[in-house]
Amino acid sequence: MNKSYLILIVIGFIFSMNLSAQNDFKIGINAGINYPDVRGHEYAKYNNFKVGYLFGVTFDYYLKENLSIKANINYEKKIKKLQLTYFNYEAEETGKESFSEIYEYINIPILLKYEFGNSKFFVNGGPFFNYLLNNEIDSDYPNDDTDIVTEQKNIDFGLSFGIGTKVSINEKNDLTIEIRDDFGIIDTGDVPKHVGGKVKTNTIKLVVGWNLGI
Image 1 (spheres, rainbow, N blue to C red):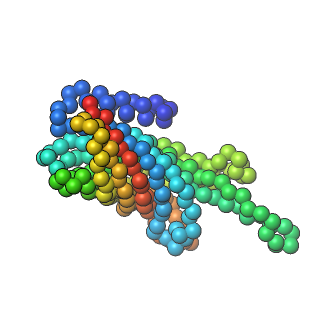
Image 2 (cartoon, one colour; image 1 turned 60 degrees about the horizontal axis):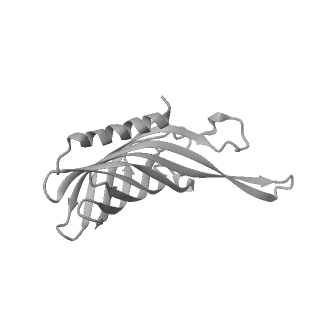
Image 3 (cartoon, rainbow, N blue to C red; image 1 turned 135 degrees about the vertical axis):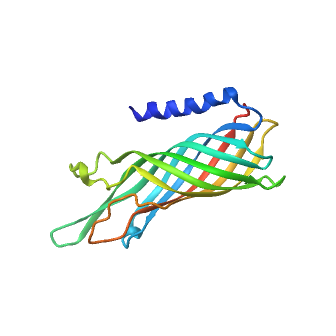
């Protein structure tokens, strides 16, 4: 199934849930930027990532006035920078050229959210699940070998923690601004035996959400 159709089906399903929702259920949309990284082996620090983005739907189910279960279904793009350095026959550097390796995910965090009374601030935490939709390199990368992409497992899982604030627009609508850290806890890649170690992810996000008031 085309990944665009999959995203639309998921978003449509979440919106349809609102037909039976009560006052303790809020639905909205969110978008933001991410800065990913990896850890787990001695060469992980040499990975050079760029800022990516995400967007999707969100909903809160309130267990109590200040306590809710918050979940997102996001499309998320992570970008790693690749750089080729060129040399002449005298081993002198003649130039550099940059390319991007793209990772596309469905990101699903399920968080317990606590709002601090009337202060408008909140914290949340819980597990997240990522499913890798696609992994590819810029089409103009000067290498015809399609196996150049990084070996990457389809599944990523870990713990997500965030802190943010809510800004009320009117009685039904509000905005949220949140800083979140998705801390991966499972091995997501195949590290060469001569290197040793694992590949675990870590992604810092800035997410802006809008409660649709419906």
